[in-house]
Image (tube, rainbow, N blue to C red; front, side, top):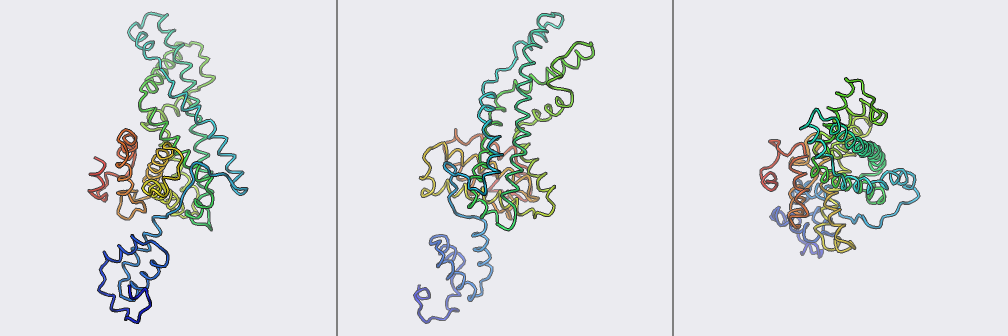
Length: 369
């Protein structure tokens, strides 16, 4: 205290201050002048390692409000925003279509149980074909979403701005990035509850192969040819097909942009995760949301970027060297009503890549059990 007041005390007198005390000073006060004086104190007291810890915390956990409700594009963002918006404006109809998906389970069971009844075979086939057209629409949308994501990544990671600067200055694009992740987790949550999606498509593949052998006229192949059917089959075989699409898109973006450092992409993801976490756990920020739905939106986005980070970064999101505060993120989720976050916690458990690595701290694994 006397140091901050400018009294003539020797800097070395402060060498006895423990790491915990200095951490408390930084965590509690968090104002620029205190951080400045703490850094001076640490430097002259011969505790440079703590300075590195504090510096790392500042870099890893940025604090600013991302306006997920009201962000509007600037002129500089407008062109990309329009491109991505043309995709996102169809997202609700995709979710509505999936939610209304009833399947042809009964018709398929009747056909399988009565293989010699031509009427039942025809009824099942005529029930499945329109559903396959609908499934093709969902799959085609995933390809458009993949392109939109890569377009946003290109904007939000390009030099000379840092990822934090991009997200803070280009909030309309950051909001669209978040909306893609939000849609993705909602789509996959719905798909996991509708086993008819995969059952219908499996029946379609088996039946079309048999009909092709019998030289039957297959008008459906004008809509879904064999190559398309193969790609759709791989897509729907995934437990979380949209998330898998985004993970592949992000990985491909990193691979194809060899001149762009990997850190630009992973820092963009970790920054988004950290900002979402801070907004959720800080009443000053969360109180600015006009709807509780925005809190759930924020949680979904946080989980989505964690999963992408875990797939793209060589060491994953759970490693001690990760720039994502996984313990803090999981705690934020567990502080919410269980019904709101069960699917999100399951996504962290079952769709991440590195959770079960030996390098994952035991306390993190325990929190997700």
